[in-house]
Length: 359
Image (cartoon, rainbow, N blue to C red; front, side):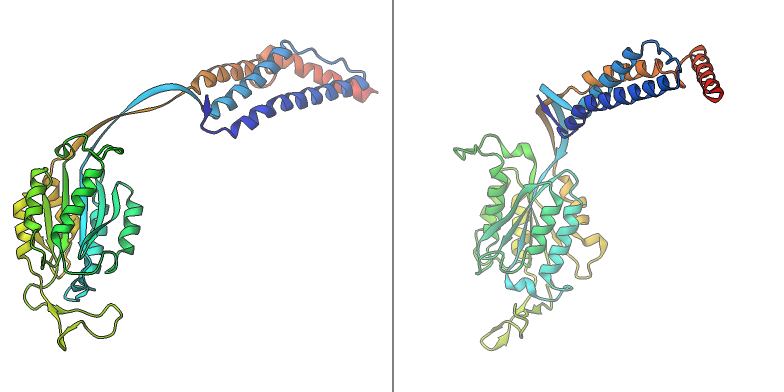
């Protein structure tokens, strides 16, 4: 047996003390009446009333502690998807052709996406030369927001942008929830969980194996949705992370544009969709809106889970507690007592008061 609120048992222990105090006060009252030569009235069923109230109170407090024992199965049904969001954190994402820059705009929109997820689980991945999982699949929105806020250009190893690494790491994150914890072997088909990957980048895949990774993702039933961010025409220079000047190559400022070819190829090869975020940042082009329009096409999985938990047994004590307290109230000589009983005690009190004044 265990208790959800064990501290309530302290109050149960105090019930006998309360009964002792009650009896002591009653004895003092009877003694005071005897000193003025008044006949102490006999209360019918006084002992039964005291017993029922004290035991009822003890049982009610015991029920309030929520005793639990035995086991019961609770069935839970929910609809969910697994969504891994991979964000490019390369230096080109510091370009300011979108406000305030590409990376911060992407983070702001991912925050909007997290709030639109509902029951879906989400994970965060940062990638540059290689990808790094920042937070596993979860429905904990607060921790996701905290991990997203801490993301910057140093969240992944430096080097040339590798979109294929982002896909591989995202698949690894999805696969972890389908692997035996000891052997690492998959225990069921990923298709059962209706997972999807969202890659946010300004393109420019310099490794070249991203399409093969996208094809593999499709074979696992995981579409990749790619989101391009940046100006595809004019481009923009890249501020140095230290805030001093701009990134240069051979003495000239580096200008980066949105290169959508690789992102489109990934989306097509995986069965996903490519979307460009407008530089204006309208409500219709936020990631939350894009998620609602496109990613909702990925079927959700109905989760039928049976959770084993201790059975709640408080009602076994609460019902008799209420019955005993009602019995004690019914035996009272106050408002719950019968009319004749109240008149008898009132007459006795008036008689006693008359005798006192006569003396």
